[in-house]
Image (cartoon, rainbow, N blue to C red; front, side, top):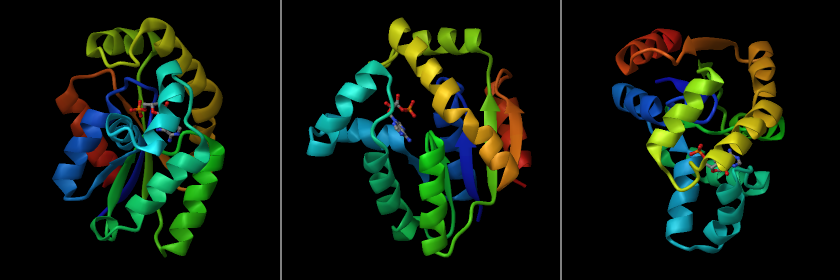
Length: 183
Ligand code: AMP
C-alpha cells in the first residue's frame, strides 16, 4: 500500500482528494490541520497553543506538528501505508519526517503537488467559509505557502520524486490523475 505526501497551496482541494485516496487505497489520511482543529475544539493545551497561529494563518511551531505526526505514524493503522495532507509545510519538517521514517524503517513512495492558481484559491477558500478563511488570513496563508512550503517542491523533486497534478479541473478528473500519479 502506498505512502504518499500530498503538497499544494491552501484551498487546492488536498483535504477532499486525500480523503478519497485514503478510501480508495484503504490507508489512513493523516492531516495535521484536522488534528490541530480537533485539539482546538477539545481545548487541550496543544490546541490552546496552536489556536493563535491558526487564527493568523501562520504555521504552528514545528515541534507541535512533528509530535502529532510521530504519534500517527507509529500507530498500527499507519503501519503499511498512509497519505499525509498538510504536512510537511517547511524544509525542517520534511527533514524531521525523513529521520522519523528511517527510524520506522519506512519510506515515502511519492510526493504529489496538487497545483492551483492563486486567484482560484482565494475564490475557493472564501466559498468554504472555515474560521481561518477570512480574506486577510487567506492572503497570509498564501504568503506562508510561497515562502515556507514551496521550497519543498525542489526538496522532493531531488529526493523522492515529485509529480504535479493540475487541481484546476473537475474533482473527478483530479482524482483520476492523482491515482495515476500514485501508480
Ligand atoms: P490546513 O487544514 O492544512 O489548511 O491547516 C490549517 C492551519 O493549521 C494552517 O494554516 C496552520 O496554522 C496549521 N497547520 C496545519 N498543518 C501544519 C503544519 N504541518 N505545520 C504548521 N502548521 C500547520
